[in-house]
Length: 409
Image (cartoon, rainbow, N blue to C red; front, side):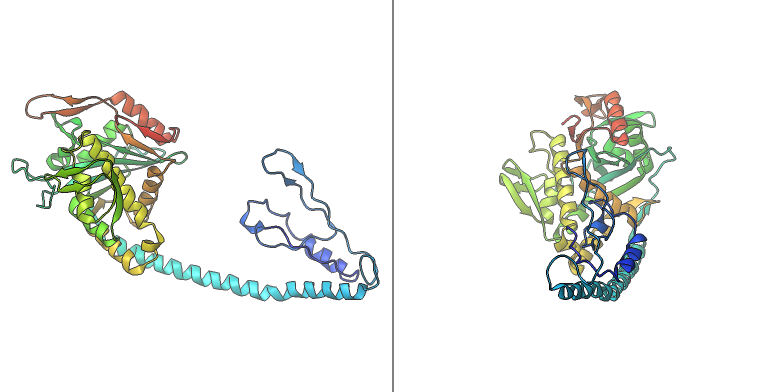
């Protein structure tokens, strides 16, 4: 906002004006927040040169005219009237100072209130968090990495997988979220059938947590990416529907008609407002998807992105009732690592939103064979391309990878 012109002062008031302005610092650059408000023009000294937008040249600003001696300024006989108006303008500036102090005090009080509320929320969230030992002692890297897991607890809900020959749970959703210090955030899916070796035997990666514990799964991800996992967040599939219902549904898109009894997904081609049950089926369906597990990974990223975006909308975030329901449902379905706290969750959500946006990197791990049979017991697996995945995550951690879609899909 351009500065308002200040009327000149009388010769008697000119020394006082010069004294007031002589102690001021040079005017801040145009992008500084403090330069956006109206500033009185300086008297008797030139302004700093202003850089022309889009050019390396600078355009000197003309110096303000100093008040001449006498009882008035400029030409004309009505000088006294102009001087009085100028003095009134100066007095108005003086009278505004108490208002500015009052506004400053009010803003300070509001800020303190927000800090108190945030502190109360901090302790409430930390008290509600369910924690498990999930981290390893691997050395850290220059980025912050979250391992996001979706656990199928075989809880009897539609699409949970009712194969009685499979006991326990499976981490069928595995995502690696990386936020470098500089550069694009990334969200990379790990195929649930990725072949790994645990305790000397081959298995699919989605079974590692059940057979050997979450810390072993974290270690497997660190071996694949070549970098440390800083935090782990596990979302139970059953809790996903409660979160979506608490926020009033989310908008999801799929370009095909689907009637899949295994997942419970009944869908007509296009975009629809999905409730919790439909969103859950949307993330589980794979048998009716020509891309199989890779297509499901795409829809899982879409669903979590939609939930994150909806949670940060003013209609949810600024509504105490709705925000409370969403937060409560989310915490009930969430398990985190032993070091995670409320601030880590906020940073995770913001990183996820950044990775899912147009300036983020999304996709899947690279693989060489999506239908590899190591032995009859394990069955069909996805054989990963270790060299390309190591190179990929080196770039993601450094923030040097260009935004876009990467990997096997």
